[in-house]
Image (cartoon, rainbow, N blue to C red):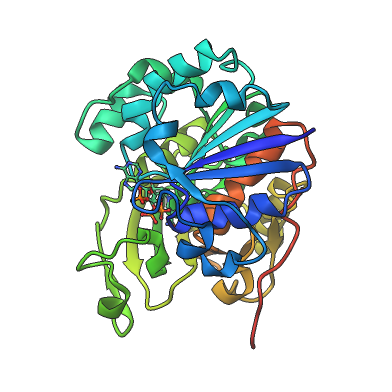
Length: 357
Ligand SMILES: NC(=O)c1ccc[n+]([C@@H]2O[C@H](COP(=O)([O-])OP(=O)(O)OC[C@H]3O[C@@H](n4cnc5c(N)ncnc54)[C@H](OP(=O)(O)O)[C@@H]3O)[C@@H](O)[C@H]2O)c1
C-alpha cells in the first residue's frame, strides 16, 4: 500500500515529529505539510534536523484548509491520509468545509484523518461543552471519530476513518489505569510532570522554557482539560474510581512521567496485580513493563511507554513514562494510522531514542 500524507500544521513540534516518523515509514510515498508563517520555506527551516534527509517545502495552510482543487490531486493517491497538528479549535472550525471538499473529490470514504488536537476526543457534545466551557462547533461530526488509544480500542481503530489521537497526559494516565478494568479501586490520586515541549513551539510566560528550567510547579490543579477524556475511558472500561489529577511543569524538554496511587484491594497481592498489568498489555508492542522506575530519558525520541508497578500492604502505585511528542502525540498517531490501514502496528516506528546513563 502506498500512502500519501498531508500534515496540517507541519511547522510546529508535533508537525516536526510527524515529518520525522512519516518520512521513514516504508509505506509512505509522499509527505506534504502546511504552515501559515513558513509557506514556501523548506521543512528544514523549522526542523533543521531534517536537512538533507527529508526534502519538501511548507505549503500555504489556506491551500489545504479550504475546498480548493488541491484535494483532487490527493484523490490520485492509493491511500490519502491527513494528520492535523493544529492548535485547539482550528480543525473543528474547518472540518465541515474539508468534509465537503473530500466528498466533492470522491475521497471522503477512504481518506484517513487523524486529529492530534483535543477537538474530537470527547464523543458526547454535552461533555465536550462542560470540559471546554464552549459548545462544539460541529457536534454532528463527533460520533464519526474513534479515540486513538490502541491499547484500549485497537479493534475500533482498525475500522476507523476518523481518529482522535489522545492527549499526552491522557495517554500516560490511561495506560496507568487500563490494568484495573472492572475493579473498583476507589479514590485514585494521579500526578504527572510534563516537559516544556508539551505546550508547543510558541512560548507563553508560563510555558517558556527559561521560566521553568530552574523551577517546578503544579498547574490546572484538579481541573486539567484531559480529565474529560480519561474519565470517558474509565467509564467505558468500567473503572468506577474517583480520579484526582494534578499536572506539573517539569524542568526538561521532552517527556511525561505519571504516577497514580490507590488503596490496594484486600484480595490482591503484588504478584496478582503484576499479572493484571502483564495481561492487559500483552500484545501491545509499545508498552514495556519495567522492574525499576520508568525513565523519561529511556523513552524520549521513541513511541514506547514504560510502565512499572509497586505495592505494599495498603497501597498500589503505577508509574508511566512516555515522550509527550512520541507515544503522547505523533508516534501514537502513526501507530493508529498503521492499525487503521491494516499494516503491522510497529511499521516505521520500531526504534528507540538515544540514551546517556
Ligand atoms: N506538544 C505536545 O506534546 C502535544 C501532545 C499531544 C497533543 N498535542 C496537540 O497537538 C496540537 C499541535 O501541538 P504542537 O505542540 O505541535 O503545537 P505547535 O508547536 O504550536 O504547532 C502548531 C502548528 O499549527 C500551525 N498553526 C498555528 N495556529 C494556526 C491557525 N490558527 N491556523 C492554522 N495553522 C495554525 C503552526 O504553524 P503556523 O503558525 O506557521 O501556521 C504550527 O505548524 C495541539 O492541538 C496540541 O494540543 C500536543
